[in-house]
Image 1: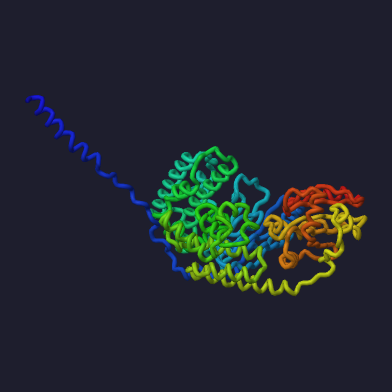
Image 2: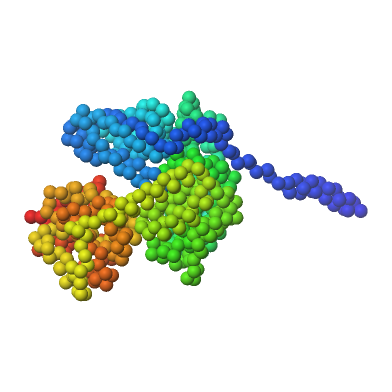
Length: 556
């Protein structure tokens, strides 16, 4: 009896403890940015306009100043329509410079190699660069001033980055699925802490205009998302290159990795301020990681996909494809169903517009272009994105119409020059026969090859650097339609008395490539004055010394 009473008493004591243990631990609420945005949307001047960049460079001597003057330029990337513009400018003998530029909307631009600045229509940024001081980190030898939001944001950019992002940027690559998830959790916790600090008020932003505060706060939080996407991208690249190391279901892991976004979607994804506060790299990482369904919808909805995307065969099932519009809809639904994100969030719309203009950049067929536009625009609800898309499509049509009129008989050679020939060596010797005794720079490329076109875009710098040499530039196109071939030649101004283009039948082009040993695209060769073929590596415009030395050696 006594033992029974003791047992009952113990049970009564234990029950409350067990009941208490079953109570749910209240999760800490995810912080949201308060008083954000604090500026009126109309203050952002999204329609673009002129702004002024001026300043002064201090150098040890005139030679160093002249060298710097030969390299300075504005690099401006419209990350919405994937368009880059380079604007060279001159530094005067006294070290001063001044130029007006047109920006399509407020954005970060690079005054290469001096500094990055924020550029907003109607503003002025003054930049002082001291080349006599050693630079341990970007911004150390630069002083920024001026008027408007551009000057405010430019002055505060480096101090904010070094205080709030330095540990984020300095972390090493994580190469294990569980470790990466733990790393992500730590970054999300830091992001939430940063949002709380912002809500309490960052001392650096005290006295800033609401517009500048909005831009800089958006930039800071966006960098956490960028790094989280970037580490995922690197890890998946590692998994792809080391097949079998980790047995993970990629779709499930993607869903798990990005599950943190739904409660933070309002300021991290569905936020139009990202358009004016981030850059090309941010959206590039987004579209190849988080927005992968949008990227794959482009492949599933394109019968041309296999020609452009090596991974297309794995994504496409069977030989059938969806219409692009159906594929777009499925992609947006997938983001909603698997990540609980809005099917029309701003970043998803940006990625669709970027994908659209990536394909228009490489395409020339009007029917294909019209289908792409008609299939994408119904999902673009942001008026500014819609405006940019329509304006850029009009520009695309205008350029293509102008290219139809392009004819240059001296540069574009007919394949009949080698009609009936099949031996690769004999075909090549026939092509170069008119240029005996000259150096011949051979560029083997294709309109479908993005790296080829990127290099062709910059090739004017190569030709400018070698203008004093007697060189013929021989461009041989691989598997390219006649229309696309001529379009690229026109777009990048690849013409002149020393430029020669051939778009040979596939069997003849393949025979030449087999003869000279083409293993990838683009491929470059140099044929010397005696007709001997030498390998040649592409030299970026910033480092042409090696190429000049090679050309100089064979010119003698």
